[in-house]
Length: 375
Ligand code: SF4
Image (tube, rainbow, N blue to C red; front, top):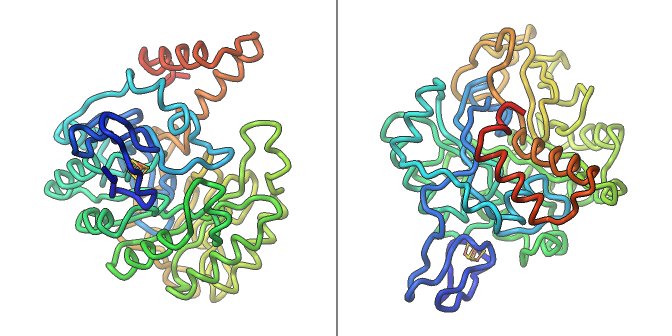
C-alpha cells in the first residue's frame, strides 16, 4: 500500500509503518498513528513561527506533533523528529474544540503547526484547521513543503500563511536530508504563492554551502522579489557539527549579497545582528527593530503602529500590527521546549548518563509532570 501524503511515497506493508513512523498500513488503509495528539501547545508571536510580514507581533497558538519525513543532520527538532519512538506515550490528546478553547484563553489570532512537519499528521491538521477557520481563526504552518500536490490541495482551503523551510536549491542537497529532489518543494511554494497564501521562506545556511542559498534565492525571486527571505544560519547542536556553522560575519555578508534578489532579507539564529530588522528599501532607515529570540525566532522591540517609514514607504505586511509587548514577555520564543530538553540531556551527559533510553525516560518525565514548562 503506497502512502500519498508526501513525495517519499512509502510502500507500506500490512501492519507496518512508513518512513516517518506516523502512518501505518491498517488492513489496506493508510492510518494516522497518533490522531489529535500533540507534544507542544503554547502561544508564540508571529515572529517565532517565523512570519515577519504577517500580523506583526500578534499571538498564535503553536501546535506540534512528532515525526518528520526528512532526516537533516543537526536538526534542531531532533528530539521530537528522530527520537520520536520514545515520545508517543506522553502526547496530549485534544479535540479541535479543546484546542480552540486554549487558543481563546491566550487571546490568539490563529493557530500554527510548527517545530515538526504537518504533513506527517495531516488528518489531525485538517480537522483542527477546519474547526479554526469556522471560528474565524487564522491558520498556518511551517513546513518543508515536500507534500504531494494532492495533499497540498487538501491543505490550501485552510491556509492563510506558510513558512516554507528550504534545505537549499539542488537535488544533491535535498538527498542529504533523505528526499529525492528539490522539485516538489519549489513546485509547492509556487502553488501556495499563486493561491494567495502569505508565503515566507527560510533557507538553511551551512558553512561553505553559500551557493545553495544563492541558488534558492535565484529560484524564488523568479516567483516574486517581494517574498520575505529568511537566512537560517546553522546552529551546531553538537561540537562535531561546529565546522558547518557559519560565523555571524559570514551570515551578514550573505544577506548583503541576497539583497540583489529581494526587498527584505533577514538573518536568524544570530545574536547581536541588525539583520533581523526591516529596513526601508527607499531611504535605508530601520522600520521594524527585532532581536534574536531563540532558534528560528525573533522579537519586535520597536515598530511604527502603521508600519510606515518616515520617508513614506509602506512596510509590506498583511493584517494588523499589534502593540509591542511591555514588561515580562508571556510568550515563548523559538524552540524553547526543545532547547530545554537539550540542556537536560547535556546535564545528564555531564553526570555520566549516556544510555539514550534513560535520557529519553527522564526527558519524558519532565515533559509529563510539567517541570519543563518552568525550566
Ligand atoms: S507521510 Fe510518512 S509514511 Fe507517508 S510517504 Fe511521507 S514519509 Fe512515508
